Length: 425
Image (cartoon, rainbow, N blue to C red; front, side, top):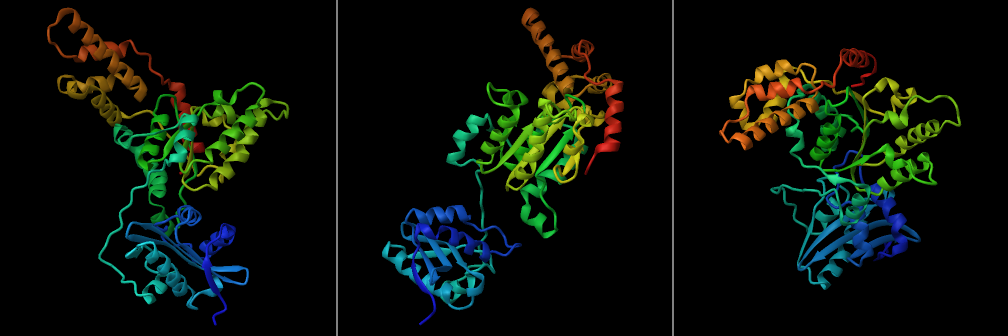
C-alpha cells in the first residue's frame, strides 16, 4: 500500500493546496495557462478536484474543468518531497474516473513542456501534441473590477494613443524600452534579469505631454488607467493621510492598473521638518505606501511633476522609483510631426515649416491650441463668406501670434539642470 491516499478536495484544504502549487512551480517557469485563482475557484465551485494526502498533510492536487464532452486539466501540483513516487499518475487516474462520469470524452491539458505533471500525463496515456501554438488575449478588467474601476474614475485607454503621440521620439523610445516592454514581456525580461518597473517619475515643464504618455502606456499594456487627484484626498472629517491610505487600499483590489498622480509635488513636496505640518504627514504616508504598492504584480505607479527639484529627497531615493525620466519640449522634428497631426489633410496647403519656426517655445499643448484656433478662424470665415477656402498659413500664424507660449527661458534652464542632476535611466 502506498503511504498516501487520494480523496476529493475540501475547502479546508485551501491553504495547503496553494502551498503545494507554489512548490510545484520553478521560478523561471512560464506563467501557467490557468492561474491559481481560477484553479481554486473551479475546485471550490464543484468542478472535479482531487488531492493526495499523507496523514493530515496534503502532498498533491489535480483539478479539471468540464465543458460538455471536453475537459481541461488545469492543475497538477506535487509537494517537493513527494515527486517521482507515482502520486501524479494516481491523481490523474482518480480525476479520469470523475471526468468520465460527468460525460467528458476528450481530456486535455495545457502545461509548459517540463512543468510538474507532464511526466504523469505521459505515463497516464496522454498524447503530447507539439504542433500547436497557444494564443491568449487577456482582459485586465474582470467583472468584479468593473464597478470598482467606475467608482475610482478609472477607464481603459485605447491602444492607439501610443501612435498618436506625434513627435517626441526620444521620449517615446526611452519610455517604451524602460517601462512598456519589460511589463508587456515579463518572461523575456526575467530571462535577462530585468525587473519590470513598478513606479516611475516623469518630469518636465507643463504641457509637454506627461499625462498623455501615462495614458498611452496604459493603452499599450491594456491595463486600466486610474488618476489620483490631490483634491480627492480632501474630505470632511478625514485626514489626507488616511484618505491616501484608503485610496491605495482600494486600488490593490484591481487585477491590474496604471495609477497616475499628476503634480505629485502637491503631496510629496519637501518636508518642512515640523511634525505638525499636514503636508509632512501626507508625504510620510505616501513614502510608506509605495513599497507596499510595489509588491503587487501588474501594477505601475506613474507620478508626474513640473518641478522635480521640489520633491522631497526621500521620495527620489532609489528603491521607491525605478526611473526618473525627463519629458521635454518638442524639438524641430517633433513640432513638425505635431503640426502635421493637428493639420491633417490641410497640411498639404499650409507652409508647415513656417509654423514650426514660429513655435520654437511652444509645448505640444500650445501647438494643439494654436492649430484649433487657426482652424476655427477659417471655419468662421467660411460660414460668413462661403468662399470654399481652406485654412491657410496666415490663419495659423495669426493664431500662433495670439497664443502665449508656456515655456520661458527660465523654465528651460531649470529643466536642463534637472536633466543633469536628477534623471535616472
